Image (cartoon, rainbow, N blue to C red; front, side, top):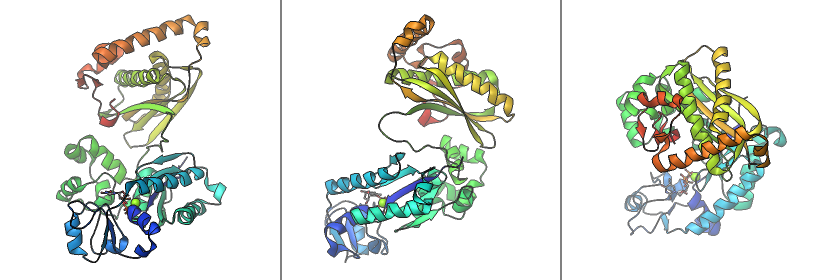
Length: 406
Ligand code: TTP
Ligand code: MG
């Protein structure tokens, strides 16, 4: 099912808060960051000042030269964090699936919420209206079926904007835009890409993946996916952990069952170790596979009782994997395993099943040894297969998705 993801970002946030407190500043060239005779940089510039080329990160001395008539304000962070809290509280009224990103931006999963407000457009307008009425601030909103497209859309819509990108249109929406509009592309990456003759996101989307990988490593894969409008990152609500997952992308696509299972075993062990560390049991196990053509599937299985044992998570993952391998014949580029429906352990269940209790005791002993000597100090026959393939570090194997190698 297509998701509905919103990215909401306040316009010229620090400056706008100052303008609410002092309406005389409205409609003027205003810079928050410090007095012009100070060393330091622009934190936020009003859109009127941006017309002179001012932007965040620019030295105040340059800003003064470009726009001497601007009003420079020192700023007061406590005011901004207070406004930020109120802003997030408004958003939380619209959907509990809210992921605050920075001080003035958030992702909101609005899937299924549209009908509550008539339509997604009405919902977005209602958010903008409340932010304006209650805080005096303007919010720009991008709506799409994933995070990356929603973020680019909100940026492009600024100021006071609203852009909806229909499901399936993400790629064509991004295509004509310059590469620096894509999240994650900083000055350095932009320069390398330009050197390769890549100026637009569409050109990046059409680059052979191997070339991107040879220049940027694992990040090349992310760039490729984002440029093609692919992004399956969930909106993650902070606070209590609702799910735990680990995944990795293979150096080359594979259907080698033993290797897939060895990787799945390792990922399952990492997931269950974290479950035990957090003192939770999981009811739902999810397998994620991405195929050569980038289609991604997830398959779930609900356990009868909550569990945190390596073997239980792995066995369920393998069952889902076997089914998926029978159903689809493509090579696999990514495998992941996750758990959700987390609950506190109910100890009395252990008493009924002494083998489960023994397994748990074994897992806990292994956890203690691993804490002391590293994750790979103890391995099952299955994960030993990975020894020759993935580099080993003290913390475990280094998989090819660095952020997920924990
Ligand atoms: P942004 O949302 O990046 O910028 P903005 O809200 O001022 O302008 P717009 O979104 O309309 O483009 O950042 C939010 C606030 O974070 C910004 O008001 C000030 C602060 N900030 C810094 O202090 N330093 C920086 O380099 C950036 C980018 C932001
Ligand atoms: Mg902003």
